[in-house]
Image 1 (tube, rainbow, N blue to C red):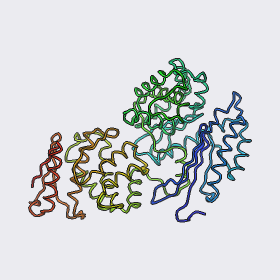
Image 2: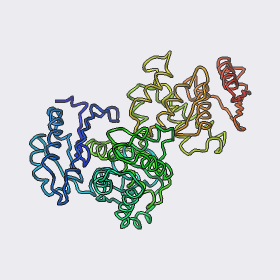
Image 3: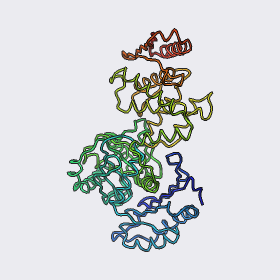
Image 4: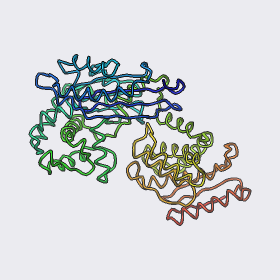
Length: 494
């Protein structure tokens, strides 16, 4: 059995397209992945017009469950949850599959209703995605699409619709032709499914829109591979539809960034998402940090609910990597003060302050490996560890910021999370805050004022402090030279 001090949890999701098993343990208030096993079972493709699940499809599922069963042998049964979704939900002969599947696993399989699936998906999003205000959450699966509105951890509207990338493939692209007519039919079909809920959802309203699971993740990976940023828009979706049509046949589809694994169901998932964007009038969508499996795991764990997911992630990293959290927070406070003094128009993106504070709190994470290359170590860690609450582009920006918090000044590129101008400005403030907090004692931090005119900064220290603190004066003078030489003027006064 696993160590009682660090229990292992397992979530198994028997989806309509793929079966997934996620094995984790709880470490320092966060989730650490131990194993992920995924098999493309495509159960939904085995449903006939009478919703009879073929023996071949069931056998694919049982073969996959046999793999999962081996890993479950030593796990506390109270820490395991196995759920089945739309394809098994719809199958008239599901009892046959469930009986044999339960024997193979040695654990019961729970078939969850569509609304319950939507509720758990929302919990997975809430536990892993940052941001505030109301969320519109969209999860396109193999045989169902969940649409949810919620705020914090509470869902206000939960809907599971009977459309998915596998069923829409069979319904609208069964001839394997990629043309305008097939896409139009698929989009119109999805709009018809969405029509009954539009009025209620639009009346509730939302502040941000996030997409979960494979279809949205595949779309984002394509956009990033093609040099676009991570934000999904209708214009980008239509551009990808045009690219898909140019190949003519599904078997010829070879879009840059599209994996072979997702190619078969890409057009149908794309059509559904276009219908959602057009029906709801969505301006932009980002990828959620989690969905059904994450929701299952977090519900198994006690005490993991945290209103600010980003703060939970930062606190967990401070513990895991023995960061001096008091010093990191002092640097974050100083950096925020400097940003506020520069004025609201200096860094216009609302997430800029969060990025600056997060980089400040984590800037010393790399010295847990070694001081000499602390920035490089920090960047490596932040590029490769899970950061619930932060998007992929935000994690990349954090890695860039912490890699350059000291030594030579190098401009960073925020490309996919912030503008390059804002990214460089955050780095300049981070570097100044680190220098100003060098005594690691908040009670003796200098009183400063910072003014900004475009890219020109003027830092003023009060009380003749520069003359009394030769080390601080030397460090600030060196920093002023580094930033100025790089084309970002900085003057030090006092």
